[in-house]
Image (cartoon, rainbow, N blue to C red):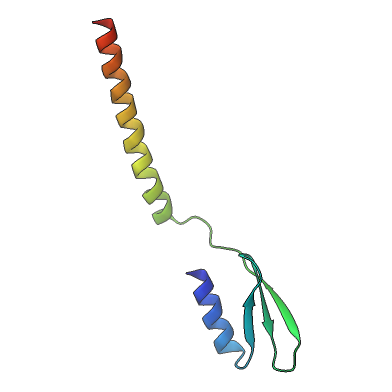
Length: 78
């Protein structure tokens, strides 16, 4: 998503320039006369939504494993 935003910003700010992605964290814009400029790019930090979408299934899974362990312990103890 962030990559699309940077692409649109470059198209608006620098018409006629070409954008080339070198890696996941760097891009190069090339001017019409051939000069190149390096643009460092840092991905967005973790948002709350990404944290919740990862954390909720993890907590549910851990709770389920806890219940399985309790059930096995009750079967073992009798």
